[in-house]
Structure formats: structure tokens, C-alpha cells
Image (cartoon, rainbow, N blue to C red; front, side, top):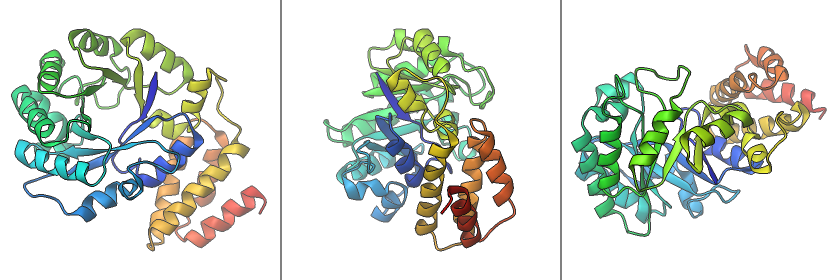
Length: 315
């Protein structure tokens, strides 16, 4: 049994990975996508999206961080995959699931699910280029418009040499609308000989138990559910409790996150925007997060927000 923190563009960056893995229960992380077009990317691009590469490819809590690549050129993805591995990435992941329209228009992410042969070429080229001891994995959705080619895509990825496949149980068109089709993840798992990781619509301990039971997968990837309730992974590992930690215990982590965002960027609006973004998800689990959001909503200056957080913490 393993728990993986999902890659989420614009949300799960190195700061979020650091905080969530220190709260506990997460075995593995995957970066936001590194967009690959037609060139070998400079080292600074990899370091910007995966600063953990400078620390053995792990978060401070010790969770390995695989580097995710997005693109459609097999040779270029392979070359950049090899570079990520050379920089210390403990794994290279290929993005065949991003539903963003701008990404899809440029032949990236879920649009490639219309071309199973291209998926095969990308995975095969990357697997050949990356040292055999470094996993090459992929993430896909059930299709672009429908699920008619889900098994074909999964088999194309597996037969090309992928070490693991994460399946998000929705099509691109379905976006993030419930439900996620966990039964389709089971179909794919049954058809493949490589490990399949289940992903989609896991918000609670009961959801986790349900996706495990319906998909038959031992490993589950969680994205928004972990960002909205950061101790979910720890409670899954412990087998309970069903309810999240007290807000008084969560609030210091919120301050930690805010301070790290502030250190990361000299632009005053960045830490404020990131905090508000996170509070918008945390309020699913804690009414107090909604109250804090209202207090900081109109603030742009980091110093003023820090004063509000200090007052909340009694500092």
C-alpha cells in the first residue's frame, strides 16, 4: 500500500510538497509538468520546478519526487527525460492526462489519448533513454471525449516499457466532475501486467477505502483531497480517525506554508495569492479556514497577512 501526492499545475509546487509530506503519510510525489517542446531544456528549468533535485530528489520529509514531462515529441521527451535522471530525479513521469485547453491545443496532455501509437512511441523512446534503474511512469485519463480507447491507450503505454501507470478515472471532457469511474480503473488494471495506480475523487477515508476496493489497486494517488485535508494521508496510514485534525493543529502548517511562499518570491502578491488559493480548498474541511480567508481576502501585502496569522496563533 502506497500513497502518492498528485501533480497539480499551479497548486502542488515544492512548497506544498514540503508541507504536505512533513504532515505525513505520503510515500511519493510527482512535480508539476515540465513543458517540453523541441529543445533540451536548461538545468535551471528542472531546478525551478523540482528544487528537490538539489537535495537527492526528495522532500525534507524524505519523499521521492519524480519529474513529470509534458509534450508530444518522442525524441525530445526522451532527451529531457535522460537529463532529468542525470540531475538526480528518482523517476520520470509522462503526462497524458492534463485536461487544460491551452495544453491540449499544443498537443500536450490528454489530447494524446487520441493517438495510442504516439503514446507508445513516447514511452518507448523515454524508457530507452533513461537508465534502467530509474522508473519511467505515465499518467493518463480514460480518454479525451469518451472511454472507447482507454484500454488501447493503457496497453500502448504498458507495452512500450512503462514501469507503472496512474489512471485518473475520468475523460478530459468530464474534467473534475463527479463521479470518477473507478470500475474503469479496475478494467485497466486487469488488462495490464504492470502496476496500476488509482486516482480520482478521493476526499475522505471512506473514499480511499472505496477506490481501493473497486479498483483493486494497492497504490492510490490523491490530489485535491490531500490539499483540502492535509492529514488525510496520515489518517489513511493509521486507519483513522475519520475526522481531520483540529484547526488549532492545522493553523501552524498554514503559517509555515505562507512563510515559505514569502521566502520563495520577493513579489509581495505571490505569498498572498498562494495562501488564498490554499484556504479556498482548506475550507472544505475546516469552517475556520473560510473565516481566515475572509480576513485576508482583500489584503495584498505579506506583512499585513503575517500579522493576521500571528494574531490567530496568539503570537
